[in-house]
Length: 355
Ligand SMILES: Nc1ncnc2c1ncn2[C@@H]1O[C@H](COP(=O)(O)OP(=O)(O)O)[C@@H](O)[C@H]1O
Ligand SMILES: [Mg+2]
Image 1 (tube, rainbow, N blue to C red):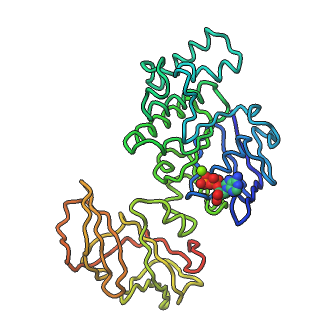
Image 2: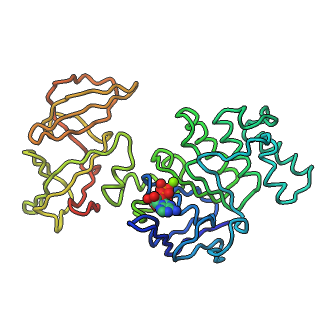
Image 3: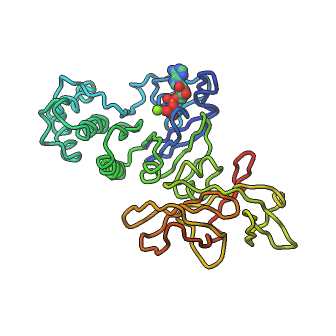
């Protein structure tokens, strides 16, 4: 059991860099992902949890014990970094055994644990090689093995897969998830990769400029982003943003996009008569016999799928649709863009907050 709680955590590097007023609780056994663009404060947060960095203010609790001033070795956490930091002159076996030796565990037990770890990670055949003699993917497995074998209370992982090539990354991602699910060790995983966050996380915390912007399960963050930054950060291809205006005519509300007037079933409230940003996911766009007139300008084939780029006739805005590849539309065709009204997201044009 290991619950981590961060309370009003702040580390200010000046120039609005660092992390600010961070409050969050990571539940025991949870695969918790911290997601955000480069420089948003992910590594800083992780290093504070590990004890490698001291916060300016705020506290870190582990199972309700204030560990803010504990040195790293007294926290019972294992950290895996992007660059695996293996000992180059030790064999794989010695690398994995190293933390156990430091823990003064007896030799027979160490051998047994290392063998078991090697089996779990499918690296038995390279146990007697040196890091320089194995591939990047294997090195990352060894680094994981060394972190896991200690049986820590918490795993901390800082972009551990980002040095691997795309195919290996997908494989290791699945493996990591499988291992974590069987060990049920509380895991805090940092990444800038939204797909990693979506596939790995029980819950995801989105950071931007050092501030927590949203905390929820990944599907919730995808479907109900708190603001337009998060909406555009999650999703591939990214969400479309279209300028529009909300109008109310009696009890009926409309979305005005260029010279199209689309009835919608939501109350615009104080946004009636105001400009808004419409967020529309590429997979939620349909081509229909009614809707917004647009022209197909470009097609990106992606095997079973294809991405169709449209230009809205009246505004010139570009919009991307993800469709199956058996479509009959061709470049230059004029058609109507349509969408299920429930799928659109509306954002405040000034502050980006969801309406
Ligand atoms: N030791 C430091 N001194 C000064 N600025 C730092 C230090 N560590 C990080 N920063 C700055 O704080 C911001 C957050 O850094 P970091 O936590 O490493 O971001 P991330 O891991 O999300 O990419 C960055 O702008 C970075 O340049
Ligand atoms: Mg980082």
